[in-house]
Image (cartoon, rainbow, N blue to C red; front, side):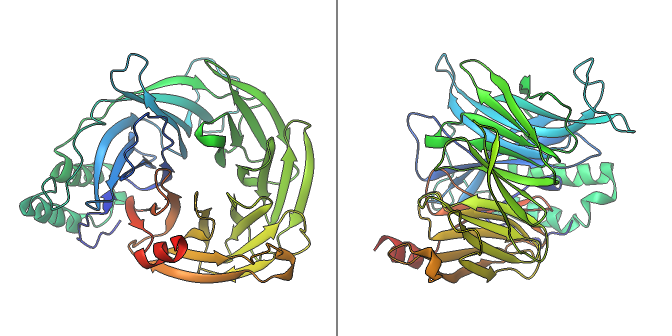
Length: 430
């Protein structure tokens, strides 16, 4: 891993490589709207891993670490389910769902599929306790920013990071030095393992954890496995296995429809499928006609039946579920694989994309006033290209606190938080 040696206020560096980024859902009674929270999980197969909770202050444009949780196994997938006050009112808890490949002897006797190396795919719910969530955030003007001496020390350490993958001991030594320069050698907190999400059949290769969080509170989880999806429902004190369905093709992503209850949409190769979970039937499908496999899918949060697909061919396509014969808009947005695509949670004209071409792009989608999508009068405009990363960018996430803030994560463990340009905000609001 190579860093440029620049320490930026809106950047955060993990000690290992990473592909896992999640924005936080919050049930806190008093939510500060200038503070934004994201979870990051490391992907090191040769050492203990970590989950970092970070906070971005959009007034000072600074990132601080709130907590580092210990996670022994490599974090394959990560999603934050909730952030809430403890029952006794003393502190806060965070609820997290992760998937990992673990040793077959973890958790005792198991009836799950084990590969030749004695490893198996597992999915867990964790609870973490936050001890310093309410510490004073960095202030505008740099009062809580690292001193110039600290920044210079961090710069020197960053220049030494030729490649964290060249050895576990050397990589850990360098990454720890860099972490201490900015965080004082913070100790890791423990994650309490609440429950394992086991289906009626063993997992083959988990591809995605999708969450049904209608109205801000999660109700269900879909664990998208290689050849099937598994649904878990939230009860008063537990998560219960509800159903599963085998598919003919290999799945690689899935998401719930925010406008239609009990609808799960999954992608397989270059096809999109929709399933009615209540009646256990396929209700729609289409050949997306991309030149490479699909990588992601997302629903428009404001306009029902509108979804976007992204592909390894660098294109995105916009679809109306009522007329699936052809996409109503096709755009080549990246020069390499599109790794994630997300509508803004509040303003559906904003679209965020990430790619293995090392860039993050912010787009504007203008729909016709009468929403007659069949006429194909929808327009695309590239608002800005963000070139903050030096390696493939695998994840992008909008803040769930505010409409204008988003984070991106590249494979080298660098997380960058950015905002929608001011002129674009005014264009949308005025």
